[in-house]
Length: 349
Image (cartoon, rainbow, N blue to C red; front, side):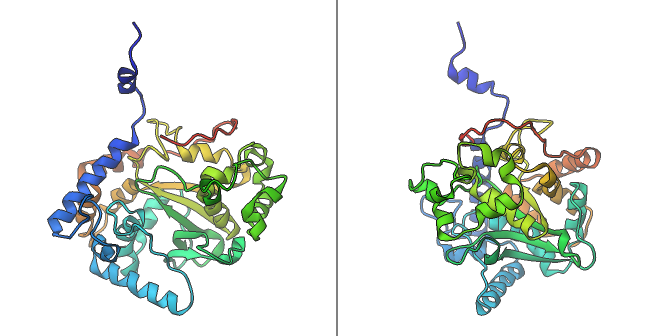
């Protein structure tokens, strides 16, 4: 008798996202309760109101820096979008504020530099600065609405070495096209008949930049399904980074199976898959670094007292950091350049 589906599910070799996310939900519920913060009546890992987002930031000086920066940008008519769910304990924006914000306000990015170099990412030369939430409406001619925004930009004296960093925590996808999600597009690839694309009709330059950078010579051009339909955010941010003479970096939680999974080679996940759509000449400009890699390097530096609170909120253990530190010091896992395969419009589960 063949085993049933429930038994087969237990033998599935890859981790499931649901169990991972539940771990973080529990840890954030406990963290908020220990702090005595008011939370949502039904969901205890979300603060009571969006206006409480400052309580989701570990260091008060980081919270104040974010407030001040937003005020300064607003006065200059520049964007500094705070996410809709910044008060959510599992917010990726809150995570990057907590993970890297303390280094920015102290003017010391050396701990981050070491982490990036260990991940095989070239650190910018000379004096380096970091900026949360960077955008440029001119790149894609996004003259209205929320333009493409990068979570963190690290720039040195050479503008061609800029790093554009997208942070992900529990997300289970790169955001798709809102036009497709609203049911106003059939998802057919309009690469060779742009009259079918509403965003192109509005004047957005996504397709012209995609052609300029060579994406349309590969799967992005040949697929019958529009690459933006499901992976709109990924392609926009990768193209934005390259068009701005920089590299794209994904900051992710190593436990999240969405972006990388399949020990020990990490051959599965969205990042290895989506890399097959990128022209060969540009693949070396797409990188990843995990939260675990960064925290493992933080162990080598002083004045990192806030990290204890970070690990409680995100439920990490120092033993895990030490193990990761040993692993990362002996082997570097790079994204796998899989052979091109037909594009399948399947969401990660």
